[in-house]
Structure formats: C-alpha cells, structure tokens
Length: 130
Ligand SMILES: [Cu+2]
Image 1: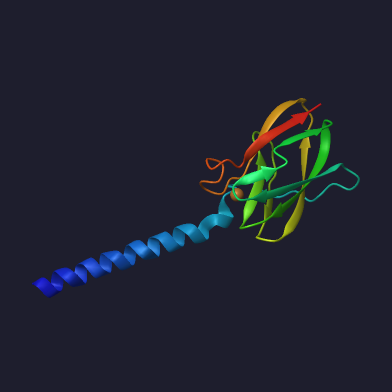
Image 2: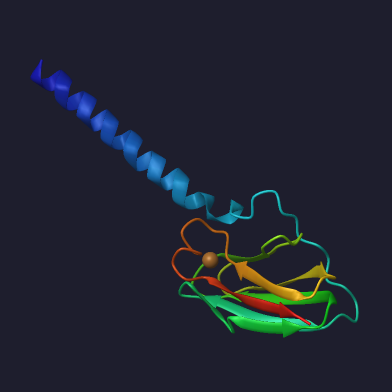
C-alpha cells in the first residue's frame, strides 16, 4: 500500500511538471487571433525594443494612417499588439520583425505584449495617433 501511494505521488508530480512545461512553451501564441500584416511600403517605421518586461520607447507618436512597427526582442520572445487595432508583431529572442498597422482615428492607444504575464509585468505603453 505504501509503495502504491508513492507511485501515485510520483505520477502526479510528473504530470505537474509536464503541465508547467507545456504552459511555458506556449509563450509564442500570446497574440490570440491576431495576424501579422505585411509591412506597408513607404509608411513611417518605428523601432521598438522589448526586453526585460518593458518596451523602449514606451511612448510613440505617429500620424494617422499606415505605420510599420519594427520590434526587436531581447531576452525572450515578445510581441507587440495595439488595443482595438488589427495586427501583431512577433519576434523571438535576438530577432527583429516588422509588421504593418493602420490607424485612421487619432487618439491615444495602448500597446502591449500579449505573452501571458508580460503586460502585467510592465510591457505596455502609449501610442499617440495625431
Ligand atoms: Cu513580452
């Protein structure tokens, strides 16, 4: 009986570890159903770095219309999404990826990294569209 109980505990521990691994390897899918748009030719391009749970810069200003975001990820995979705007940029550690966004309505928008826990950790900023 004692052996059986230990075996059950080990099995539960193995399941737990497997679950955690599956969870953390899911980091790339944070963007939900957002799809990256191809960069727009001749649209203004803004370079943003995501590293250590923050964006640099975390305040961006662009004219209304099409824009491209070039995201460089530092320590790990990050992405860049804008609230209420279609599109996403996803970059693996050490990579730079560029994608397009189109915002026709001026105002203040919040951008963030949608990898679970990253926004809560501080990966968000403000995009002002003029
Ligand atoms: Cu991130």
